[in-house]
Length: 323
Image (cartoon, rainbow, N blue to C red):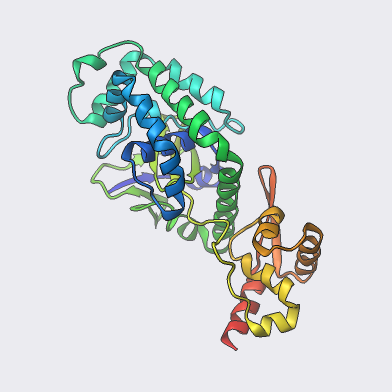
């Protein structure tokens, strides 16, 4: 199996990063496969797949580039550059780094992902530019219109994993991050199930990058940083709000109890308004009372403030459901 050897300092300084480039790459993978990764993604695929296929049909070289880049085991590094870890990534800056990659490095990346020699038509100097142009198109046409909601999903995932980390350590926070990945203990982080020698990354920056499609990969800029790109584990808006236990409704009031039930996963005030149908003022009052009672906590994630149940809130709900 492939695993990274990390030390306490590397773990302590690791952080979560939201990367527009990673989201664009994950979306590109979904479009290239032509199949939604979960039911909620089907409308998005249906809306954008025809334009994507038309885009590649008009540019055979880029179409061949994508097929070479999205290999069976590896994704070409020129499509998956790790974030720099210096502040919040901006797409323009991330794309500039893709364009700055040398043609020689890009061809080497593609040889690894393809698992063999490149077709003669890819022996050219504009591969990094083509990769960046396609990723920019995917972003502008298929990701940017949905970015505010996707960003909220990522922020909620970060808050949830931070909570898992504080309660159960790295084993809890990383257990379901992506298939084949788990915390082995003794400073060992299993990245995948492939039979590769371990990498010692002590002293490097370790980044965790959520994306909303169910895609994932590892990337690095040796020896400076390593990144794990992983699919968000939850959703923010359930199709039907969870039922409120009758006893809990009698105790707190049905509206306030409904807010507490929904906070199994972190949500913003705006999302709670949409899910409950209550007004912003009402939701705000419920949250204040729940906060004062230590049944929920809040945490800032980027530009949002997300609320989630505390252990006391979980225990109260479990007791009412059991009764």
